[in-house]
Amino acid sequence: MPSAPATAPEGFHVSDEQRRPRAAAAFDALGAEYERAFAGSRTHRRSLEWLLGRLAPGSRVLDVGSGTGRPTAGTLAAAGHDVLGVDVSPVMVELAARQVPDAVFQCADIRDAPLDDGSFDAVCVYFSLLQLDRREQTELVGRLVRLLRPEGYLVLATVPLDVEGVDATFMGQPVRVSSFPAQRLVALAEEAGLEVLDQEASMFTPTHPDARPEPHLFLHCRRRATAAPDA
Image (tube, rainbow, N blue to C red; front, side, top):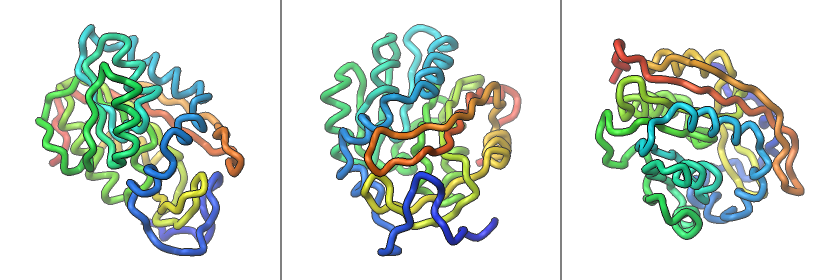
């Protein structure tokens, strides 16, 4: 894998502290501010519409890195689906439970959450991989595919950049960012047992004083019925 570049990805500012805080600490501090900053993403809304158009009534959906519960869990629950949100930030989980009472939220690291293989009709992963390193991202996507029923859907959104282990400041909070360029992310999804049905790239500027335009990539995928993903 390429080594981390000397500069942070666009939209992030390099941190002088050069340390890796827990993701929970950063998002505990952001709380509802994160929701306000990203509420205007039309691409995210279109992604949810794509998923809603394919789910059977009452589908079971896992929202990974569920944040404040909006828009993802709230939109899916309002459509009558059985939504479980998992987030590492207790502040986010508290906000989500209050804002989206029709969904269930757990404060946990998704990598350790006791979930059964083949138990979800869909999994949403909206920008929740970026603070994992590339190996962790690859392993987690593989696990999430196994949680899907055959031909279940997985929607994955990220900032598609060729970066690994970049210390940065995001909306005033220190984070460490890793990601993949678009083609490598598509390859990762396919190797994990997914068929990429659709993808959309866009530029988005969060509503925040320190924000800059950042690239977003949304992959809309389905678990292949005949080829089980690698363990």
